[in-house]
Amino acid sequence: MTQPVLLWFRQDLRLSDQPALLAAAAEGEVIPIYILDDDTPGDWRIGGAQRWWLHHSLASLSAALEAVGSRLILRRGGSAEQLRALMSETGATRVHAIQHYEPWWRAAEDELDDVLVLHEGNHLARVEDVVTGSGGQFKVFSSFWKALSHIMPPADPLPAPDEIAVPATWPASDRLADWALLPTKPDWSTGFDEWTVGEEAAMEAAIQFADAVDVYDEARNLPATQGTSRLSPHLHFGEISPRQVWHAIGGRSEGVTTFRKELAWRDFTDGVVLSLPAYAETNGRAAFDRLPWRTGAEANDDLKAWQTGRTGYPIVDAGMRQLWATGWMHNRVRMIAASFLVKHLLIDWREGQRWYWNCLVDADYGNNAVNWQWIAGTGVDSNMFSRIMAPLGQSEKFGAGDYIRQWVPELRGVPDPAIHDPDESGSRPRGYPAKIIGHREARVRALEALKKTK
Image (cartoon, rainbow, N blue to C red; front, side, top):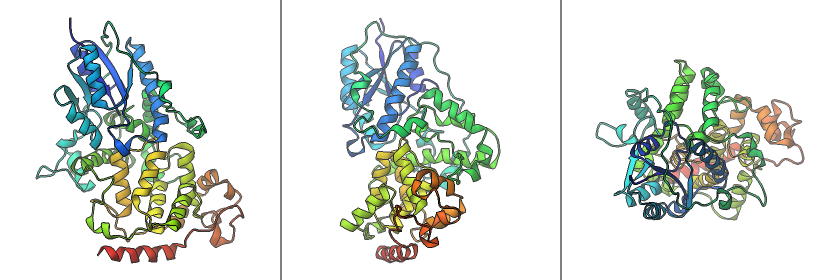
């Protein structure tokens, strides 16, 4: 008799292009496991929006495993502890898993070092293989992209196994419904119904986007149109692998190149947190430790106005309301809203990052941290703090009128171009707030604060 092996799912919830699954299946009987671990991540346990997605993704994965005669075992607790317990219960001596780079997952992997077999499967290339001449991780994306390009395209995706051997007896499993991942009182997720979750939906989304990718370079900046791929939550949960996406979206157009750089950015951010594990909590540039972020009651009120879409800047408010309603925000608007918090309101980027972490279905430790530090100017590879994005100008430049009308119903009757700045045009309806701060006033305040970092 052969001993079973455990297959540890984390953010790789798929059967296709799943090297850990294939390796486990080659050894014999496979026991697939997912552990809801709120202990090991500490303060970085997944937020509410991610839990909604996780529920549906696990349901989809469970159904896919049952279709090939297997099943998904659910446990809750510390990952290392639960896996050790399962090994004791089942007689398994090995655990197969795809490698992850979040600091808590690396800590769990270290605890399981004697039994864990890690496989690369969530990146275009193994993160440790794309390094500088001195062997370190890249801190600048342009240099990273140049190095990665030399070893692209990625290998062809691996097919799902035709069959998975199963044990004669199964260990006990939690019920997914008992985890209460879905909100009920109140159910704030009614707007999430626009998403279809799971491996099959992820591949369908990639194929559909392939038909529109040639105009991606321009369309991705237009909030009122569907110009982005919307693949980010599927990629975050590993319902589709980056190399599956790379090969699904072929061609040589400028749009394809731009999109593949966005795909590569995810690899880059994992390299950053590999070398700087606390990057989500610590300024990449130490000088910004001296920047006097606003705190206190007034700053807290401003933070609340930003979170709830009541700043008086229509493009910012539309984005923040879209985020709350759907668990996602258009990429261009994410940058505008983040810049507004950091530079117009002079509120610490970590406050915004935490809000995004709880509200985004695609919240990703490395991606979120690097993006926030890029826009804040505090990161190892970042925009200059002194480059202060003008949200009103951005709104008009990228034709956000219909996007604003969709998410800020108070402004639906305001025509272009007044809708981008209803205060200035005298068109602000009574129910919509005045600007929380003027753009010029905010710019002066931000630049004064910047001087403290010198």
